[in-house]
Length: 129
Image 1 (tube, rainbow, N blue to C red):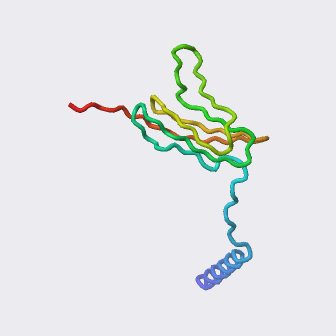
Image 2 (cartoon, rainbow, N blue to C red):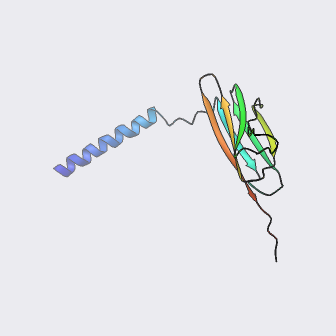
Image 3 (tube, rainbow, N blue to C red):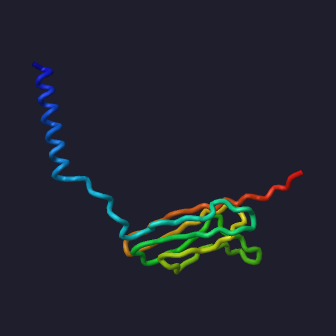
């Protein structure tokens, strides 16, 4: 009797769940309406002295900027700012890091901000003996 009641209850719950899914089907993810769509560095690893390209795409933004960590050092100045502001919503930037560097893409709107990072690893050429 207990087993029969349990199976009946299981059947009813399954039926209710199944019917509920038919009435309220799974909805696809909502596309990005504002923020960062993509941000990447290519290539991700470069020999010392070579260049990499940063590419980004944003949607519905008011301001786009890129910063880097660690900041570049200027031997003629104490300033180490690496902030690049007023970038277009979609673009690319060629960089030539001297050390492994993480680039941060930032976007700001009226009441929100969004960030993404891309890393370029710098490898030193090793001489063979």
